[in-house]
Image 1: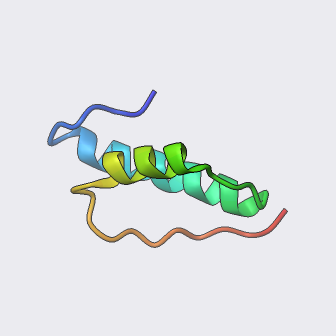
Image 2: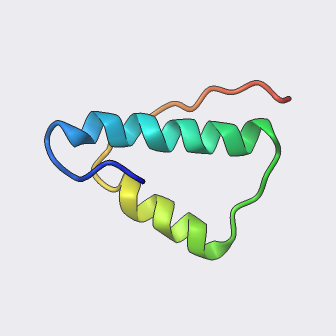
Length: 56
C-alpha cells in the first residue's frame, strides 16, 4: 500500500515510489498506461527524485 499524502508521509511515499520504479527498471519490467498514470498521480508533489538501479 502506498503511504498516505501527509507531511510525514511524503518522504515515505517518495521512497516507496522510487523503490518501486527502480525494481521495475532493474528487472526490465514494463508498466501499462494505468500503472504509469497511478505512479504519476502518487508522485505529484514529491519533487524530483533520482532513481538509481543496477540491471539484474
